Image (tube, rainbow, N blue to C red):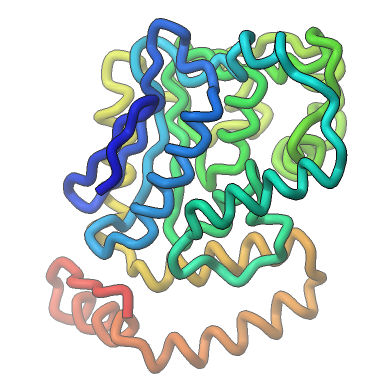
Amino acid sequence: MADYQDILYDVDDHIATVTLNRPDKLNAWTRQMEAEVRRAMADAAGDADARVIVLTGAGRGFCAGADMSLLQGVESTTDEARAAADRDAMAASPIPDALDLPDDFSLRYTYFPSVPKPIIAAVNGPCAGLGMVMALYADIRFAADEAFFTTAFARRGLIAEHGIDYMLPHLIGLPNAMDLLLSARKISATEAHRIGLVNQVFPLASFMDDVRAYAGDLARMISPRSMRVMKEQLYRTLTHGLGEAIEIANREMVKSFDSEDFKEGVAHFMEKRAPAFTGR
């Protein structure tokens, strides 16, 4: 297992937890953190004991965005340089058993959908800028009741970065996306839930227990194979039409009938016992 500096990583009860660990800086994003999060996601993807991944922040924040010291020294970057950075990131930590998705979902900041296991963003506090981008690429988002969200970019003289202009309208609709991007205002966890940005809001006092209860149910009661295939189906539909979605579903259903998890899914229901899925 890799040694980490800016994150914490552990696997317990089939849940891999990736914790951004710069609490004195509200877990502001660094290049070191970027590389370590990708390594941790690769570790979790390749670990048969990890069935669900939780991404959260240490201390009172999720991620305050890019570390301002990085922004102060930033220089204009060419398309070629950005493409090289994407290739370097993918080569450094390839995702084992990555889902078969368009290359758009495997770039430097967009690769969470390609990870073959569900990723839950557990937003425990402030979530801004690049931190919000990473939360959007998670599959499910939960927020503590004291968390808040802001795109932040417009207030730094920047634009909608790293595909957030694609993800936000798909998640919350064009009018809400326009509002959050143009105003860069802070929204509460309650408003984030109302507009569909987060799935559920939990009390801060019990937040991680509530998140782990949900993640544990996925890990114990749901077929890993089903979750992997469904995740791939859902992200494919973002770029495919209905007909292609149905064609893919028909093929995958036939494969499901031949899987060990399907046999176990029927057996545990008929025998009224807990499932023992293997992901095969």
